[in-house]
Amino acid sequence: MFAAREAWKAGLWAPRHWAGNIVAGVIVGVVALPLAMAFAIASGVKPEQGLYTAIVAGVVVSLFGGSRTQIAGPTGAFIVILSGIVAEHGVAGLQLATLMAGLMLCAFGLARLGGVIRYIPLPVILGFTAGIGIIIWVGQWQAFFGLPAVPGQFFHEKLWFLLRNLPKLDWVTTAFGFGSLALVLLPRRVPALRRIPGPLLALVAATMLQGLCQFPQLATIGSTFGELPRGLPMPHWPDSGLDRIVPLIGPAFTIALLGAIESLLSAVVADNMAGTRHDSNAELFGQGLANVISPLFGGIAATGAIARTATSIRSGGTAPLAGVVHALVLVLVLLVFAPLARNIPLATLAAILFVVAWNMSEAHRVLRLIRHAPRADAVILGLTLLLTVFADLVVAVNIGIVLSVLHFLRRMAASVDVVPVAIPDAVPGGDTSRVRALRVRGPLFFAAVESLRAAFRDEPVDVLILCLDQSPFADATSLQVLDDEISAAQARGVRVILCGADARIRAKLNRMGTLSRLGGGDFQPDLAAALGAAGRTPA
Image (cartoon, rainbow, N blue to C red; front, side):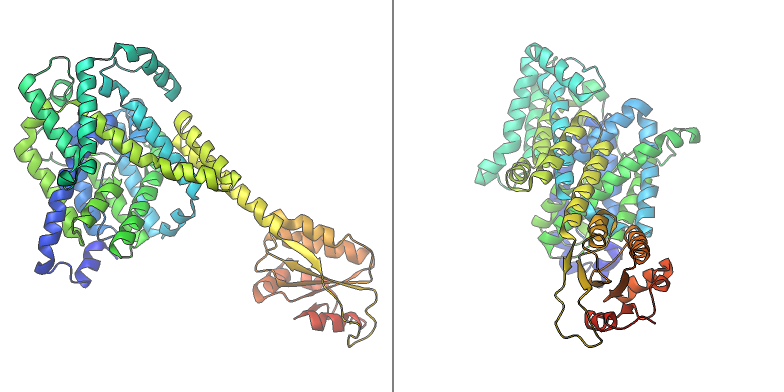
């Protein structure tokens, strides 16, 4: 169910809800202004493209997403991916990849894959988000300290260059950077300023100071990118040929995967704050639609923004109207205040991203998990973080998920055992002195087949009863091993009786031909019936 329709059914479009949502939209629009420009610049595109993205995605996701309180736009999580795509394929390539990612997200939503994202383990999510935070932080050193342009493709090359050139910092730029950082953090420390967004406070103060003093060595939006255009551009197809689609499939999938993760995480945060319940499939479709439309207006990739969504909810936002108003505020900024943006120092935007990177890294959660979580989870987190920083985000997520699955399989296999069952002295049906009964506890799957093999190769008996009443499911590998072991036991003269399997496992055994391999009466509904059959001659 789309957010606009759900809000309509809940009566949230009624006039009595307008005031709170308009106020929330204005506040979150003011918060989004410096962030959208900072994220765009850090991603390798012009600042106005971040505003275009926030405007288009803000409207589309608010109306067609799966959460009625979600605020979407460019986010810090995308910086690493988008800047890499721009470096390799150019801005046009980035816009085409964004459009392709939007189509993928729409397909995810239509295929009802929203619930699959929940299966990504917490150590992997914390690892790659903390890694992205580190990359963003180091990536802003050049603008924060006024250092030379950074060469190199890999993180360690850029870090070493920045460290070697740190003594060459520009003192005016550095002073603006630290001053802006202090102003961003100031409202958190001063109760009287608590309702003023820190990034906006830093942006206004630094821009006014540069407008008055005009420090020639201080890089600004005007000196680097020129003046911001007024208004939205006309929609147009990305200036990129269709022959570039195949090379961009990988980057597009990366954008889609990260966008899905971030948007659904943001929707969960919104649910916890607002007491709502989002539709994950509609959310993916809405995010996909936004990423299809955004590049047509010159924008870049967008997803749900956790900080802006939380700001909207805390400010009284309860409906998609807040997201639409937030977009209209940004349109107003482009129409009226665009010429003033030329004096915004890049060092101020870098300071804002310092705080974004710190918040994104969630250092307290990372340290808590490393200290208190099982060692394997801590190792997976650390490895995912290092691979994100020094290799590639997709590689890091893939390896983190694979290691988590392997660890889970190892633990699951260790939890499966085959235990002996005591046989009563008096059993109806005859002599059971040469009968052995075993019960399988846990699922029968490929990683646990050794326990099954060992059960057939213990001390010799005439009759072996295998009880499956505590096995919730069985896969093809375990069923094939079971069939092979039954054949081998029968070749040794051992009669095998199966019992207690539920209807699904019994159907699988029948398809595998295992039931036809057993003698007549050698498949019983429960252990008591199996013990009775063990004392009788098989049919």
